[in-house]
Structure formats: structure tokens, C-alpha cells
Image (cartoon, rainbow, N blue to C red; front, side, top):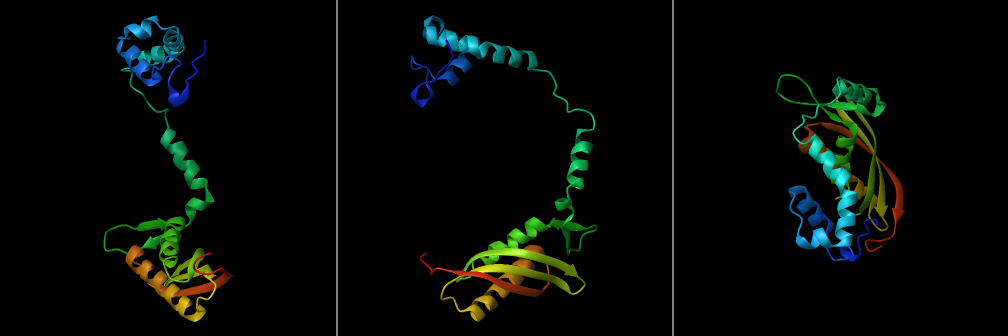
Length: 184
């Protein structure tokens, strides 16, 4: 007989399998659980798991040698992990932020601008003058493009300053699409 939880995850007799496992693990099954054919069948299926748990209990778990080195080598080999930007600061050393994180912060701020539906940060360039950002925006139909673009630029600059400490020197906006109105 296979363990086949019924409605709500209970065994056909109504016993919760998780409670059965807890009782078995504690070595204290109830009278019902000892006598019920459904509970005994489930207990037989859970026995290998409980035995393995008992064998491993108390044994220290050690990662394979050089696991961290292998993982970090894989991360560094991923070309996406190389795109990082410096953050200004007074501390010793250098703080960097990944492109994906910086873009998400700028995009989130930009999408709060009224009349803007969706923004994609297409490009981030960092040089001595500051950061240049290129965004593609989907605007709502009827949104005045010059005013919305001005507000969008200011939102990106403010987010860059407040969230990343960047001086955003330029924000270029590509209107990728105009869709529906505020309701749809």
C-alpha cells in the first residue's frame, strides 16, 4: 500500500502524515498509528528516511574541498558578473554595485513617474563626468511627452544620487511605445 494522502494531505484514516513522522521520529507512535493499516503502510515508507536521518544525526556535514573556490570561479567566469560600477565613498577600498542592481533601482524610481508604464534601462556608462543612462520607456496615451520626459529624467537623477551616490550627468530617453490610457 503506497502512502496516498487524501483531501487536505491526510492519510485515508485521517492521520496527518507530518504528525505520524513526528511520532515515529520520537519513537512514540499512538495506539491508532500502531494498529491502523494506513498508518503502518506510511510508517514503512517513511522508515528509510527516518533511518537515514538517524544515521546522519550528529555527524558533522562538511563541504567538499575547494567548493567555494569552484563556485567563485564559475561566478567570475559569467560575463554578466563583470558588469559592475563604482560607488563613491569616503571609506578605504572600493565599493561596487552590479549593473542589474543599479538598473533595478533606477527603473523602479522611473516607473513611479505619472504617465510612465514601463522602463527598461538600456545602457549605463560611467566616466569622469558622471554616469550616463539610456532608458527605453513605455508611456501612457495622453501623457504629455516633454513634461513626462523631464520628470523621468529627474526621477532617474534623484534615484542615482540618493540610492547610489552617483552624479547622473545625462539621461537619454527613448519612447519605445505609447499604450492605452491610465485605466487600460
